[in-house]
Structure formats: structure tokens, C-alpha cells
Amino acid sequence: MALSNNVIGAINFVAVLLSIPVIGAGIWLATETDNSCVKILQWPVIILGILILIVALAGFIGGFWRVPWLLIFYLVAMLILIILLACLVVFIYMVTMRGSGHLEPSRAYLEYHLEDFSGWLRRRVRSSYKWERIKNCLSSTPMCAELNQSYSMAQDFFNAHLNPLQSGCCKPPTLCGFTFVNPTYWISPISMAADMDCVQWNNDQTQLCYNCDSCKAGLLANLRKEWRRADIILLITLVALIWVYLIGCCAFRNAKTEDLFRRYKQGYV
Image 1 (cartoon, rainbow, N blue to C red):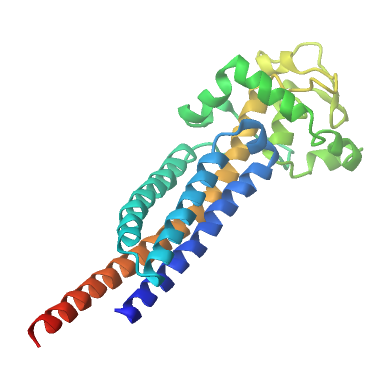
Image 2: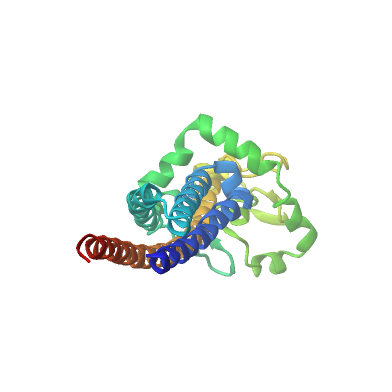
């Protein structure tokens, strides 16, 4: 029985370690500019990771110090958390299936359209109240000002591989036909294309294209890229947790069998 308890404790210690990548994925998302402005996914991931840590610690203590009710709590609670983590992995995958960028002639960077993304993601930026808060957060970052320091020639800028936020928020859409002065200052044509983003563009360095749908699409494209990376980490952790949980269940069952057999022998010898 002591050996089985030690095995259960060791297995649950592995579960403790597996909470680290979940918490780490949430913290990483929180440090990214777009996620820190939107604040959708990072806290559910961090909270789920902390709950996995607490439950795994309970199983670790219950295994090494032979506390049966803690082990039972671990088995029930960890099963619930595994289901929640699986639901989160599937949810992230489903809402990030759509949203690829579009190539434009003579441009290395991609353009992004809001309608390409899932309805759930679009609703996160549709509300004028929500977008005003997000826009103020984005405009306070140096991401657009950094472009002016890096590119002074039009061709160099057109050959640049901008991230989705820079492509959507810091410049007008290519279809507008604006003339390049610097990455964040453009001369509008006499007759602009019939696209509201072309009208929304403003050379004021605090405005730029932050009110454009292309900026919202760029934000969602950035979120999509980062969420899919986090989803890979969560999926790997989920598979490992399931494996650890199944081994823990087998060890717990064997420990109970050994305990019953020992009591049986003590009663009849």
C-alpha cells in the first residue's frame, strides 16, 4: 500500500508540472499587445491552469500522506477540469478556423477583411463601446511609430512583412490607392474607392486607421495567430493530463485492491 501511495503521489506530481504550460500560455497571452487590449482568453486559461495546479497538489498530498478523501477529490475534480480543458481546446480551434489574409499586387504584407473571421470573434469588436476601449489601448502602443523608424522608402515598406495589426491599423488599405509619404502618412487620391475604410483613414498619428474595419480584422488576425499557438500548447497538455489521469486511476484502483486484500488476510489468518 505504501508503494502504491508513493506511485500515486509521483503521478500527481507530474500533473502539478503539467499545470505550468497552461498557466504559462495564459501569461504569455496576457503579455501580448492585442490580447492585453481585448482581454478575452488569457484569464480563463490562467484560472484553469491554477485550478489544475490546486487539484494536482491535492492528489499529490493525498497520495504521499495517504489521505483517501483527497485522492477521491482529485479523481473527480481532475476529470471535470480535463473536460473543461478539452472544451476550451475545441472552442479555440472552432473560432480560429477562419481568417486568413489576402495578397495584394506588389505588396509583401497581407490585407485582412473583417467578414473572413468567425461570427463569435467579430462580435468581440462590433460594439462601439468595446472597440473604443480597445482602440485607445492599441493607439497608446508604439507599433505604428516603429514603422516610421524602420521604413523611409515606399518600396522598402511595400516589401515589408508587417504583422496583421500594423497592416490593418497603421496604414490605409491598398485598394484605397493612397500615395505613400511615410508608413503612417499618406496622400489621398482625388476620387477614393467606395470603401468606408478609405474615408476613415486619418493622417493624425493618434487616429490613423484605428476606426477602420481593417484594423478590427488585423486585431482578430493577430488574436487568431496567437490563440492557435496557445491551443497547440493546451492540446499537448490535455493529452498528457489524460494519460496521467488514467495511470493515476489504475494506481488508485490497485492500491484499493491491495488494501482490501491485506484486510482480508488479516481477518482470516
